[in-house]
Length: 543
View 1 (tube, rainbow, N blue to C red):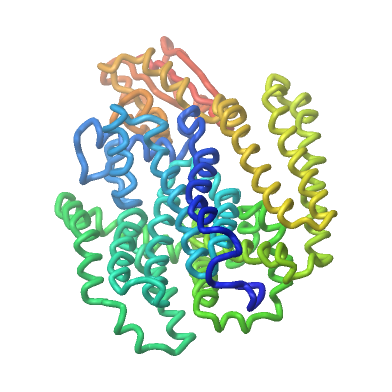
View 2: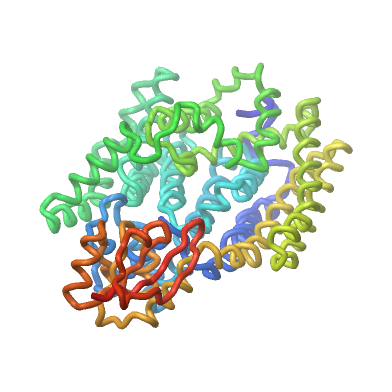
C-alpha cells in the first residue's frame, strides 16, 4: 500500500499549523462539491421520489416506526436514512428536495474526513489529506453525495466503524474505541441492513486469519460490543416487527438479503461486472490507479505492514463479496473507495518525493486521458449546438473549465510535475461539478423530473376525486400531488370498473398503454408530458 519503506509514519516535513488546517480545507472542498444547488432539481425516478414519499408520509403522520409507500409496507431498507430526513425536515418545516438529499451530502462530508483520518493514522497527514481529495473528487462519490440513496450514509458509518476498529486493533487508539466501532456498525445496519455488521466482520476476520493472530480476538471486547450493537440496532427492528406482525422482518431478511444476494432481483450481472464498472466510477483517478498498480507490482512485501494489509483486505473483501452476489449495482462498491483513494495518494506522494519514477505507463495513460478530456470538452458546445441548441450557453462554462483543466494537467504530466498534475486534476473536477450542479443538472431536470407534470395534475384533479395509475407506479406523482395512495389499475377491465363506479375516473397512463384502454365517448386527454423516455397522459375516463 506504500510506495516505499521511506514513507514516514509520523509527521510530514510540514508544520503542525499546516496539518491542523487540513480538516478545514477538506470541509471547504466538500462544501463546494456536495452542497451547491442541492435542492434546485426535482426528484428523479425511481429511487429519489420513492424515498421522498416515504419521508413525506412519515412527516405528515408523525410516524417514526413504519415506512410505507403508496399504501404498501416498505421493506427494502431500514429506517435510519428516513429518520435523518425527518430531522432535517422538522428544522426546515417540510420534506423537500433539499432535506431529502441532505443526509447523503453530509455523509459524503463525513466520509471525506474519515478517509483523511484513516490515511493520517496509518501513514501521515499529507497522505490522508491527498486521499480525502481523491475520494471527494471521484465520480461515484460525487454522484451519490447528491443523490437520494442510503449507500453514502451507509458507507460513512461503515468506514468510520472500520476506522475506529483499526485504531484499536493496531494499537493506534484506545481499547474503548472497539465499542465505538460496534456502535457505528449498528448505525450502518440501521441504514442498509445486515451488511453493516457482516462486511466489517469479514474484513477483520480475514486480517486475523492472514496474520494468524487469532488470540487478538479476545481483545476485541466482543460481549460488550454485542451489547452496544443490540442496544442501538435492535429496538427499531423489534418495534417494526411487532407493529407489522413480523411481516417487515420476514420480507427484509428473506427478500432483500437472501434472495437479493442469490437470485439477482432485477440486477443480475456476471461475476466480472465490477471489473468493468469500477474504473468508470473512480474517474478521473483510475488514470493513475493503473500505473500505481504497475509501479507497486514487486512490492507486495509491504503487505507485511499491518496498516497496508488492513486496507488491502478492506478493498478486496468488499470486491469479492459483491462479485459473488447475483445482484450487482455500481454503487455497491462505494465502501471500498477509501482504501482505493489512499492507495492513489500514496502513489502521488512517492511521485512527489521522487521515490517512484514517472514511467512510460504513467506518462502515456495520463496524456491519453487528459488530452482526450480537453479535446472532448472543446467539442461539447459544438455537439450541443447541433442537438440541444437552447443549452449552448450552459455548455460553455463547463467546456471551458474541463478543457483548461485537462490541458494544464497534460502539460504537468509532460513537464513531470506530479504536484501540478494532482492538484490541477482535483481543481478541474471541483470547478466542473460546480458547473454541472448550478447549470447542467437543473437544465436536464426539465426532462427527468416529474415535478411540473405532477403539479399540473394536482391543479387539475380535485383532492376529493380518486386518481389512478395504469400498470405502473411513479412515486413522483404521490409526492408532488400530496396523495398517499394512487391506486394501480392493472388491466382495461379495472379501468372500466373504476370509471363505472363514479361515472368517471382520472387515470395516469403511458403512451404505449393508451391504445389498450377505452376512455369512453366522453373521455379525453387532460394533460401530457414526457418524462425521460416515456410519455405520460392524464386522461379522464367517462362512462
